Length: 145
Image (cartoon, rainbow, N blue to C red; front, side, top):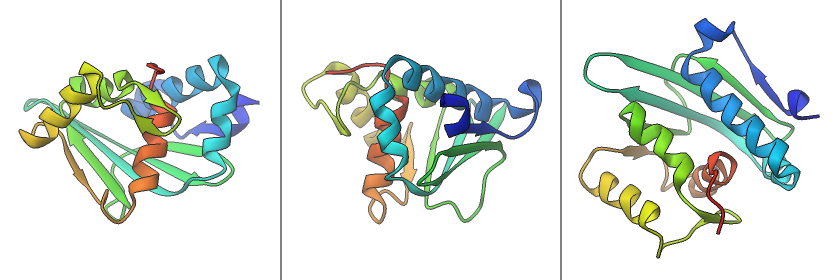
């Protein structure tokens, strides 16, 4: 069932960050199948850019209320774009969640907020698409409240 919900375009080497994010979502859905209902609520595109100064990797996640497709490259018209280092992008999976809400008293959540305030993590489009971003966090988070 999980494979029907999450699709990756390109082979493993070509997919890069898109493949890593898809594997993360698949693993979370395997461990907690109830999260699949998040996919039925998600409509839009999320661009992810991981840049450590030497190498830049981009992915686009496409949600159509039936599942998620992940592809390499950045869609310039993505509804939400998250930028950061590879480490901070993967660190999004550490933010503990209760449903689709980050737990504000946990250090991982504070670390993300501090990274955003310091400009280490940037999020474009969150103000106009907050639920898309929160549901994405709910899908990728391995930390539950």
